[in-house]
Length: 198
Image (cartoon, rainbow, N blue to C red; front, side, top):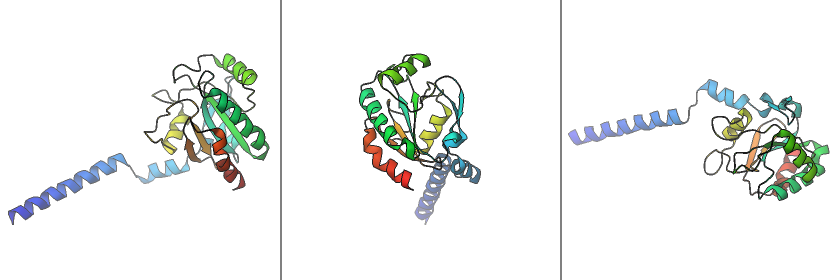
């Protein structure tokens, strides 16, 4: 009888510990759940490449691909080329690409905003909007990127792994998918088409 009581006590203690751990790891208070479900990218204001405030609500009703870009990365040429193809094909159908330069990965976007704009517009012929240089990881990560990572974590943690990580956002401003830096923009085309048709 003492053995049964001891094992029951151990079981109860383990259950209490498991509940405590789960409730602190995955909080589910109604206010937190409401806050998470009500947020969209439209709640954010960012700076464009010239330093002007831009409300992402200006893109309401559009399908959006958000990309952290760099001018001196091994993925730069192919990504800009394919992003331009997608933008040219779908920009008149309600599709937008928002590019955020970032220098956090091997210092591959070292220029200031003016230099970045020059390179992106002349060398890569990008016509889609380029925004202010941001940090995407760490304590100084841009609020938009904190939100994006909360909505769609990566395979090995939420952090952005490299340049050209891509987030696909639907017409309601909700993040619906995340793509690795090595995912070709053209491989995302079918997902973009589905959202444009919805």
